[in-house]
Length: 362
Image (cartoon, rainbow, N blue to C red; front, side, top):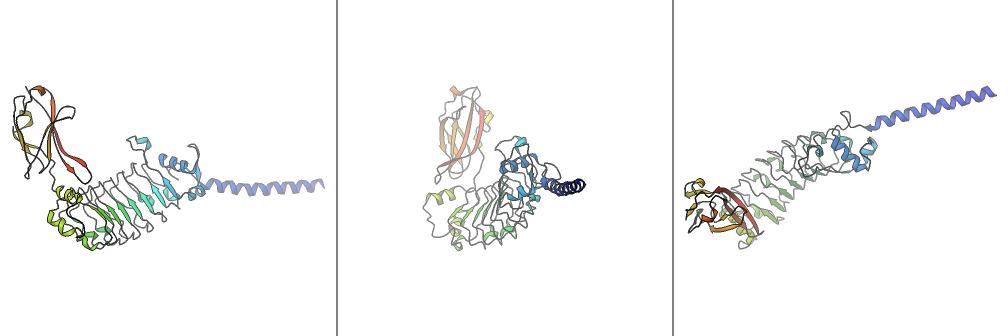
């Protein structure tokens, strides 16, 4: 009887060991490590741990990773390298992500996001991207922010038909042909690029807002055909008043401050060139007159070393300005500056075009 009990006990122990070993092996296989076999980027790994509510010394499993649908992994708004994500390798482990914010980091590639098929919102602003490789099959994507990178085009978004919003300010974009078939697009931000034309939007009739300030536009599509359009910004381009009058919706009033500011803030010159004297190093305490060329219809002001205005004049329609009856004796040996600026009356903003510092010689 005793022998029989021993045999039964041994059998039970063996069965328990056999049951536990596979579970342990399985548990170990599900851990995603912070190395090249898992997610190697330390900062990204820590962001995921934070999302899971785990301490920085812990790890997480594939099952835990699959629970994450939203990840805020933006870097701090500073230049501290230790706070920046440099690689998204392994991000595909978060297979159920619908929202990903990795802005303000040091990313040079987003190729590792290509398997995030559920992604609807992607923010990769303020990184170092030169291409959007990896985005091509994210068919559920609705909102994309690629602002402040080094992109020259939108190659990769051609088939992302669910996109309703694209923000791409401050890149080097010259060509937007890749968006021409994104018929559900409602909002697009293209400020601060190198665009000369917007032909690619001619079939995007659901657009409600277009921002394209600070480009090189000289032509616009006929915006009278965009019945949903409510907001556009085309300042700081090369558009003539005739072009704006013809292409902007005819129902929009031409007497409003917005329209007047849009017309005024075209073909802006960010220079100050002296006529008399011929150079800034020729200015001395005995000078009574300073003339030169700046942007047309701008304000040119002479300012002290603290930036306080001494005197200001308006440049004419050709950009010429003249300061007369100057008395610079009290400023001898000090650093002054000439500043040109224009006002955006609609927003009440002062836009500094150019500032040149100089010393008043004895």
